[in-house]
Image (cartoon, each protein chain N blue to C red):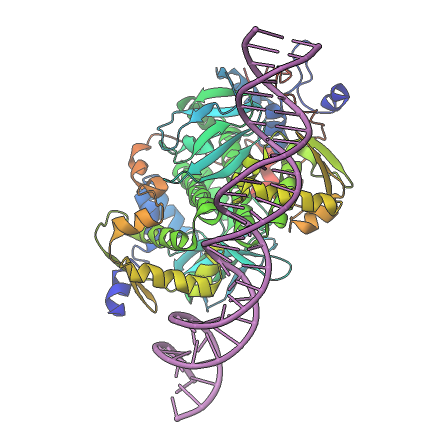
Length: 279
Length: 279
DNA sequence: CGCCTATTTGATCCTCATCAAAGAATGTGG
DNA sequence: CCACATTCTTTGATGAGGATCAAATAGGCG
């Protein structure tokens, strides 16, 4: 059962050479990247790192000069207060860039760590910068990714600021479903969801206990079924309504509308003063 | 007084032409833009629009093909739920781009409206796109702006998810102080703050009543003084501690030459027509 | 099988929401 | 310039959603 649903998740199917991973698929689906550009990205010499649950990629406040592409497993960006409260500011699923900000900022004020076991591809950021300078689509792609994160975060502020616990949970599950590739599925959706209720709590600004109660509420309303590690959304439309979820989340269908727009390359030489920031 | 501080700002000292706008300053201070690029931006043919309090720039869910640069006054991005709850996802101060996302997304799912009277510069997005294609620094500048918004939003999730009302308010005031240019000021800070307590409530996910009580709390703790339209932070360090505020917010020290300037008492009626900006 | 972590449920408390209404500023029209 | 309307701020009283504390149950894993 879980097997089946896990298999449905578009994960990295490794053969000899990197077969289309979630990352490839994601990048390709944007429409920004030409085949050559994708090839360039894949050839740019990355290190693959395997990490355990809780494995740390970036400590809060660290200097970072590496971009991590999440190949497999889930991760998160988080912040903690001095007295130990934790807020997860971003959940990362296969295909996401773990620390996009590191492209422009030397220091990250969020920490990044694995929520499951998994693998990341580590790329020095100056190598990415070089790529971006040579391939306009690549620069544009990263810009797009940044803006997409923005959209997610904007929406999250609505969740955290104005939605009830039940609504927040509903919204999160809808969001994850879309980000995992089920944006066009109506009816019911089943997917693997390795987050613990504590992770969800830290994402939604709640306590684990209350997350549990919200789950029960949604379950008794018949909106979803959840077993350990798997979520089954029974009625997508109803859950979206319950969570104030905008169906065209992330403008996924916009992507094909905006092909001709070009953001110029990141070119250090042309703008010398930016040097220290891109390297 | 204002004269003196404005004069401290580095770029564009032109005699007859009014002093550099906040927007100029902001763009220049990033260090991404060469003088030629700034000139290009200013020549790209913009329309200036004057708006009243509550004036709408973008309706939630609208198709948008214009970028609005906030020249004067404050604005916000917001979302509303079906039953009318409102969350402000971004506060915009002079110099900010109101709807940066419109650069890449056709549709905006947030609304944008003025919180005070003010003026914006409207630029068709394909014109910006052309500029970005010709001037690397401009493309990079917009990318940087997007990433900066990201940082703010990440931090806001911590506020909304894990901080108490008092902490949230403290954090917001610290954030605004930095964004208004006081990042390097220690001791005390006084600045004009045209937000009503209801705006603040919608930003912090609270009710106006509770915002008022949080204000009183901070006031009785001696951390700040507030009169209508003006905030005086008595002890910046203490307020930052109270709000879990990271002093190197927005990575501002990465940006060189951040000018120190004073924002005058906010005047609703006749916002001083100081500037002739991008044009 | 036993340890450990995650989920579930109950009881109580507290922060913040809600409802209500009285003051202060500000704006408007005469 | 005053009188009135409007908006914003302030304070009080009460209520609810979610936090906290505690403990039992259920899974996963060596």
